[in-house]
Amino acid sequence: MIGFIGTGNMASAMIGGIIKSGLYPPSQIIVSDASENALNRLAENHPGIVKAKNNIETTQRATMLILSVKPHIYEPVLREIREEISQETLIITIAAGVTIKKVEELLQRPLKVIRTMPNTPALVGMAMTALCPNKKVTEEELQQVKELFSSFGKAELLPESQINAFTSLCGSSPAWIFMAIEALADGAVLQGIPRDKAYPMVAQAVAGSAKMVLDSGEHPAVLKDRVCSPGGTTIEAVAQLEKDGLRASLIEAVRVCTAKADRLSGD
Image: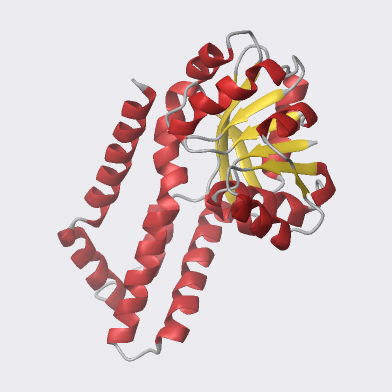
């Protein structure tokens, strides 16, 4: 059984993705949350999901326990449940800045911990997740967790030293991409395209462009160059974006986001 302690946006996205994939039915997912309203909303969205009375029940019944609470809640939650965790339970974290070492210290005994960082496109089966296990996790168990996260997107192993950068690159970047979609749609509205048409149009353009990168295996610059005809409209806009510092802004966004995750980790 998969257990979730915390049912916020990320947990809801993951649960939705897991159920949509068919890998686990709602009856094999148990959840607990300090908010009864949050639990009821989740149960309404996913009939058949198991609502635990408390975190202890979730811990006792789950073979894979996903700690989907805010980083500052990890300490009190782990202190509450650590005596109830089985030696065979896979403890899965999804919080930015919470290191494996920190979790191990709070558990006060050697247990199986896998640090992960998914992103919210899990809800539509398009997540990108990084996985990093501690030494107690077997290869078979790691593959089991990778299969779980792959049920709603892609999952890759990364050393923990790169997790904070990954948090920026994939965990936070959907917010920046949503901002870009909104801005492009605003530009379309300025040029007379109705807003209700502009959003799906630009979203489809972004989705198609991303799929070209994934499917072609070609460098993004090569794909960009193919759109830019000599003296054409696209290269005119590219020149303006370069002038306005689009690349530099995105690079800086990754840097400051990573730096924030480093501070949360105590690095």
